[in-house]
Length: 480
Ligand SMILES: *[C@@H]1O[C@H](CO)[C@@H](O)[C@H](O)[C@H]1NC(C)=O
Ligand SMILES: CC(=O)N[C@H]1CO[C@H](CO)[C@@H](O)[C@@H]1O
Ligand SMILES: CC(=O)N[C@H]1CO[C@H](CO)[C@@H](O)[C@@H]1O
Image (tube, rainbow, N blue to C red; front, side, top):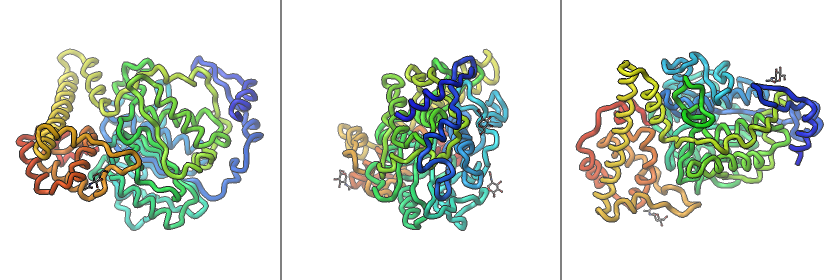
């Protein structure tokens, strides 16, 4: 393998970083192996679109992932004018952040926040702006920097999304969320406009496989990989309590397993010789092996021929910065990732444990924990009850949890799904980030040809009371 040849050449230079032995590759070695796609000979422009879909300090890791991805592309040689960043931007200066103005994405990681362009922040992080940016449609933007992907037919586009998700849906920090059919439709339109040569899409989210499963056709020159398959959660990492836990002052997870796996991989290898397919295999292994019952299946979709492309085509390359760290190679195998859906509870719990007895902070943490738990129980109970009201006591749960055969999309009638989510939320309050896990249940209700009146009646009966806290409130829009 070329990678190991490089490693041997690199052996001559040894540097100690953070007390560990790290190999640095001389740039000459990389040049020696650079192929037709080597740096400088790439036709067209590289574009990057990065989106963190959440907000709230308990979701620290999504914005950390996206800031880290920015640094990677920037070091790879992409220009700021070609990297478009979406993030709510409420982490770096959050009162909970122990290092104000700084975001890290691994326990001993450096600041990844510095220099990140604030293209679309706060309420400008919307589905509308995300799709307009991908399509290069300036006229459709509302707010933000105005930067869009103004790509041409020879250009290469890399899109990275990190957040909570659910079957068929990706969270946004604003209302509404992004549904798979809208994203796929935008990608088809982008292809039809002839404004890229190839496009790579990486998604970190629970059930992220459902965004492409049965939906992304071949022939669009798109290669997508996702943190999990269509039916399972994805995992947060570098969490408190992990054997690679954050510094003690952090009471939150610093990254997500699939995201840090691809980024740390990209930082270690020569991206002119490592292909997308090689990275997929490495990331798949690291994400799958991390811990029994705490792992997910990284999936790939679309045009698998793009697997042979060197990663540098999308992320650029910075030969001077390749470091091989032997110790890191399997480091996450023994880590204990945390289910993405439980990472908020972990944050409130850690905050509660560490706060001084009797302090205002302790009370605040207790309230946050109780509210999050109350919301979860409310959502679990109401969905279950809606199922029983629609399908009968015996059949309810079975109908709601039915999974269509792989290769089939989550639902055929996306308008029904969106409308029924709206109906449920009208009577039962916001699903919020936790409730996204019930998208399949609602999709199955559509698939069973239930009428909107029946759905409304069942929701009204199931949700006599809605807890009054920010998770359940439709106005506060925690639906992320
Ligand atoms: C949204 O974009 C507009 C226009 O660029 C800008 O004035 C505003 O400050 C942005 N809002 C946020 C919350 O970032
Ligand atoms: C961390 C590190 O090694 N950074 C180097 C990356 O390469 C540039 C030159 O291309 C150096 O200036 C940095 O010091
Ligand atoms: C109404 C509807 O969409 N029914 C579909 C539900 O799912 C099954 C299995 O995929 C299909 O065969 C039905 O047509």
